[in-house]
Length: 103
Image (cartoon, rainbow, N blue to C red):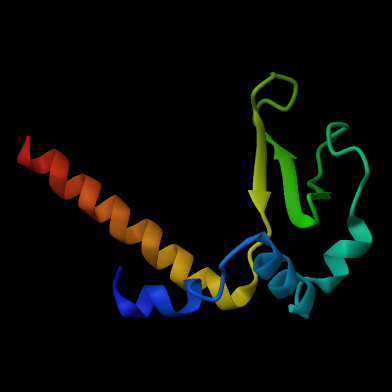
């Protein structure tokens, strides 16, 4: 993995490291006030919940909210990791495109 990606991501060795980063991130601390016990009761708004103490976000498709399987679950990513994760995704998408062009 390139060093510009590996450095921020190397901060996370296990789930506890992610939880500590989430808890220390001041821009997302207000989301802990929105945590729900039952995220399965989604309405038209996103729901925040804890999964093994990891802050998560659940939402439904706005186009078809009543169709099963249109739920989305996301990990709330601390800002220190966002750029690195986006770079990883873009690199893998680019590699996939290049691999498909070789076919």
